[in-house]
Length: 315
Image (cartoon, rainbow, N blue to C red; front, top):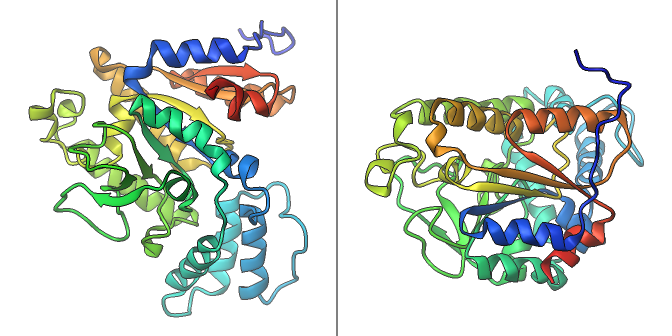
């Protein structure tokens, strides 16, 4: 029985300790970025919650919001509350997706983040991001590419990436891949819960057709439908997660981590590692998040401050 009153031993890691983890696993790494990198390096850009408030005030006839969204509602649910009020409008989803694209297209990148991007480029590692914006490709001066894929859709451009070179497959080297959609294809931007459930359904169909080929050598791996997409990274690379809140509303990525853990349980020889770096937290909700992450095979790395995450470990 777990005694919630008994504190577990917590180790606060130094930048050099994190660097050692990256160095030891560099050939197997992929990095996963959430909005934390934007919040740290591009503070002048509008935040995601502020953008949702703007959309609410534009498309809702109900009371206006000024500063923040209520606690107790996720961002996806907040978007769905907007969508419900406009559900009879033709192509409303595409309209609001264009609004998001147009707003994010104006966001300014900060080249200071290249301290991170240049290191990852030197490691020749893929980047997965849950963001929609193109600030990382702009900072790193990357071009858009596609891996040939017969199932391409601008709703699900999962074979599209940004890089400084063409890749033969997603784990072939440095590139930026978008899990939740990208502003290059506005209809790919996932905002509401039902849209994320569409992602889940698509992944299910891809995963469970020739599932055993996912982690095989290239000749056999080509036999599974996710091979030309970022899904191939999820199951074939160790994940180093940075700047991602991973709150309960991150339903799609949380579900991917669950499916990843199940796959490794079924095929233990294919197992890969995972780490989640965060500033030390004292609140009870962090304990639940840590429990979830450890349950899906992700080790939680706690550090003293954000400078360690976004500067010191990359020096």
